[in-house]
Length: 256
Image 1: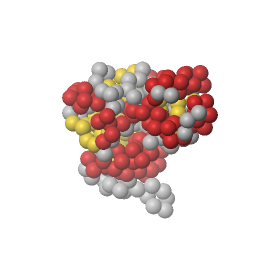
Image 2 (image 1 turned 180 degrees about the vertical axis):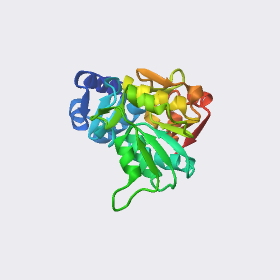
Image 3 (image 1 turned 180 degrees about the horizontal axis):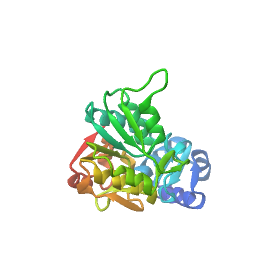
Image 4 (image 1 turned 60 degrees about the vertical axis):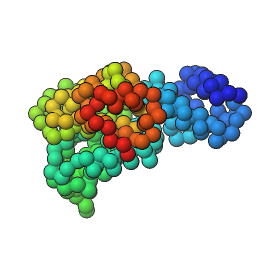
């Protein structure tokens, strides 16, 4: 069976079920696990799917739950987090939105000193603040507003209004996708509103997006390519459709 035929069948299975396991693809297509693994990697690079633990989900279904995202492309996200940490100076003031990538960035930034981080992510705030036995070395301001338990974030009019009080050095944002036409995009309006406000009020905008998000456009744009000062992504993004066009429009690209 040609790989394009396998891709078509895998896409069809996902459209019917929303999620499909590696084991089911192996059984349905009568191919090896290694072949399925390669196919899922390629489909993810094309922006058609997102790999999750044990299988895949369709991009069109929106973002997977936060606990699923937290287990997806962890190595790539950690590499991005380490790169972002090298671009942040001690003592800076930062915005950070909510997501699995920004949680890992918060963890990487916990070694910094004197940061003031304003975030709507409960997990990012927790990682930066440390614990009672080992308190963090940075100040953390958790934005108010409505609480979304599924993601562990705050949002809404009160959250956006509070963001406007600050003028930080840098906004660190992690979108669903980044393309050359719309820029950074989100699937949910409430997430896009928060990210847009952060991008508007920060002196510079850093977008952290792993290779599978490059060339991908979600439903709602919140930061145009020309307003992205730094895009941090993986080296593998060079193979992603749309990377060359994105790189021409953003301020600079840093590869992890």
